[in-house]
Length: 200
Image 1 (tube, helix red, strand yellow):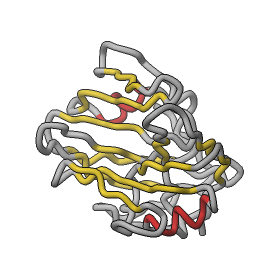
Image 2 (spheres, rainbow, N blue to C red):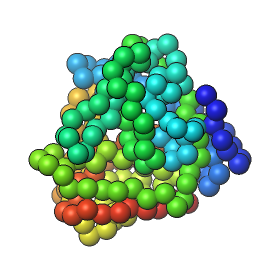
Image 3 (cartoon, rainbow, N blue to C red):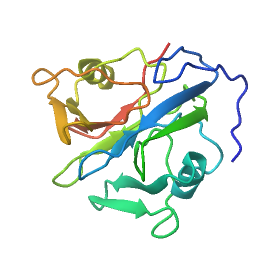
């Protein structure tokens, strides 16, 4: 698939990362761990043209088995099984969940859109917003995301693959975890909020 970049800066593997306002190339380790086997991933805000679940499967390669996203309006997951299901469109700033048949290094290439905003909503019982964090963010932990979102932020969580559990920061208490470049996070707010992520 085509990726459109003004300038691409090559970044080191294993999530070691340099920053550029122009472009990124990040090697993100996808794992197959436990029963859930979930990998929540952040994509660059410019990632190809018309990014869909099927283009993610193609980009990862033969080891990709599933790409899903959380639909806030219905409080359900929408799944593409890399050949069947719902081939949904991926919105800029939206995190996705990926499964693979075996541990795989996914080389993610894209660039950032500094004017892109992320709409955080408070819908239904779960109130979850799965979001992509820019690879060159200045907010590298959960408390930083709370600060960046502002006074309406109530929770930032991530999925810990090794333990198959969520780790939660309640914007003042809990576990103030570090965000790994390429990792998607879940954000809750007290009221609908527009977030413009900070970055270098």
